[in-house]
Image (cartoon, rainbow, N blue to C red; front, side, top):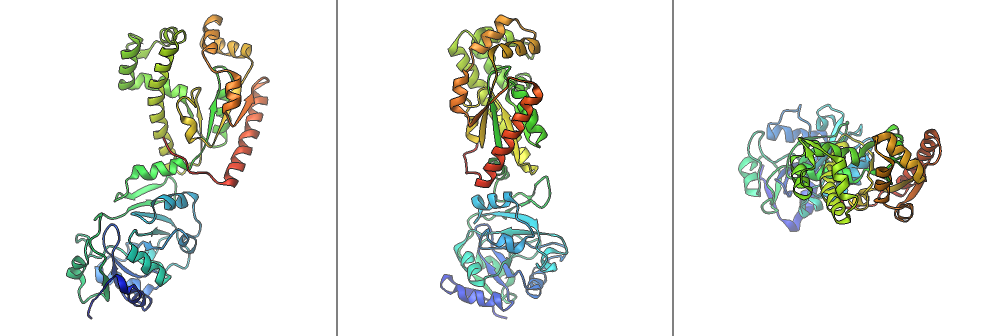
Length: 414
């Protein structure tokens, strides 16, 4: 057999070889792949034979775009479409549950199938002309270095495969990253050219996130509990702040540098800090800037971790949701309001502080009118806890249903 070298002007010839059951080495943005018709079991068997690849190792399929997901998988996860929208064409292989008619030799008898859309114009043209997905592992004997040029491929397989498309040198030279969405939690099976952090960030940006805000004592904790019962990851920014003041040496250093000796060992003296900031707007602004920086970074970490577990709904309770720019990652923001006297009584009972100090805290916070103008909607907590919880559940259910019907708009992630 003579191995043909095919140039950019003759991709139709490569498509003929693929359709007839032959093998063609193809360029991608990572390394060269050894391609065959992924729906032809006999052609795929040749890949295993030429590479010396154990048949217990499944193959992934190259596809022209995300439309092929319906053809190749039983069901298409919303997260898969989101990843494809940002990273295809590109060095990401996504694994889902295989359609039943994908040849068993491709799946190595398993129930899952990896798909990838390569970022190389010649291979994308080949996929379009063929009209079939391509089984295409790296074009090297098993265990040998992956080839980055057509010449590398010929050194391995000259006379053993039908053709190689000469697309120049591959730019990345590292295999694609592989993630499985076929089970929860999602897992990175191979770390490759695409950073795992970028994947987690994209999945997190696709969460439906409800923001909860309002003044102290308004009832945000009850609203958050309702969302927790609805299956949401719930993040209480105030609790997160207190946790970080204990365990973050960097945050402690910034607070001490700005406000002096406000720590007793590793414990922040909240009342002492409060006496400083609640009577000094500049000091309060500085405290908020420090707080938002550390709380937002930890919030991002928690959301990314939750998204990688396959989660879909999250909630963030934060008084300073707008000041900290957390509203930018929320699908909807609800303000929780309550009469001032009720708030004072709740704060006094919860924290054992004086009426005067409770009033000072409330007066330092935003007005009801601010929340009414800034939020998606407001929930008034002026009855029993049960009545308020029912009000929250109805409002959250409605906004989630309407939001999912419309589809989530892409938004920048913190």
